Image (cartoon, rainbow, N blue to C red; front, side, top):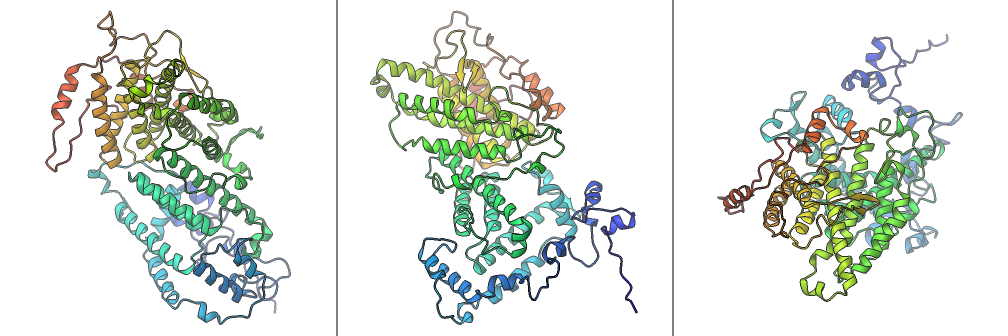
Length: 628
């Protein structure tokens, strides 16, 4: 008797009850649209498509003969050799996938087999129990589904005030408890996996990198730098800094269906992101990079993932950006800055600094993608790539920060050093001071635009806090120089191809807004709190600097210079909420007079706090309660 054939259900349970066909993903397309990821379940308790992806075999093949299992692949015919080599790598510190060290030589030699049980750490058996215990501590599935659906693909650096965030819950469990539990589980699982496999993989590198970014959001740049160091070490141990030339360690199914090439691309992109962060921190903190200068040249991204563009115009061509274009340009900028070979603690030479700036304009600027152009960016793809406006501002922050990095040492020159320079170098130094001020000004404008795209409210995004402080300090230091060339003639100064005019009033207003932002974010960030305290003191000092005599005593309050906040481009304005747009436009309509009485009250408030720490100087919000 012929056995009755069972009909395979082609949808998840919610779609099946609605007589709908879904894509059998997790969550499926219909459950995602309905925002009911927690209800997307399948019969049998297995994830959709898992069996098809992992256990589907070529036609006529069987598990026992043709395709080895994962354990057989790792421990089968070469199991003893693989275990022996892993033990050697752990003992001697060899890189397992090298083709030039002693371990590569031993891999090609036939040595007597060793007792594999001697190579197994007895403590590893108890580690599996630890792993099962930690996995059992994970929050309920409906909570994990919610987090995966709403927070994995989105950068969420916003935060609530301390008096309200404790009441936020997901399915009856507080966010604080969920975060602490997941962080503790992640740390314990990372330790267990490190004991089982010292080499690690791409997943370990990504985990360490995300942990470092978390430290950055918590306001610890030093801890962030150490986290990048840990991720760099893990990347070298896992071998993602090398382009794979063989498929020896990849499962056969990945080799056959092309998924291995996609994994290689993810490895390339992860290493490029790590290289960009390492280089950026090295410039800002004056550290030695962890990754070698040219380590990223051979493993730049190669695949163009059109799926990133989403609902893009029909005429897709090679000039269209993708989601990784900004990171790739950051890598190219890092490579260029490293090629300058700027020596640490070297005496500042205006001629050499000018040469480096000219190289930046001549060699790097022409390579910038049109969507990220400094002066007039192409905004054709802003609607198709919603994150493109944010990425554009991040790139602007990086490139103007690199200009500041080039000219910043001139602020350390003493009067005797300046007096000893030839006349033409003193003239060059004055123009570089102005260019440094313009770079700091444009960096602060980019930070402000990025902050507005985040809602203009409370955030712990490290790039906003750190670069606000850095650029504000540079601008205020220049304002303390009585000989700074403010309002020298009617001609604008060129900065990276843009014509900008800088007045003292505009510089002080931009610095004031930066301090207000730091003071607002100080409630959640120690970095913002300490930065606001220092920048406020510097602001008061810059205000009292004696300026050249002016025939009109009221001319400081009324200036013919352009408005502080020039109108943003249409693409950037569309990325900002309507209420924030009104606040931005209203900034240019206010014309406040900075009076000494404001700073007398600030100085009087600069007394020691009860806990012995210096209390911050409060600058009144001259622009109104905009929360910027």
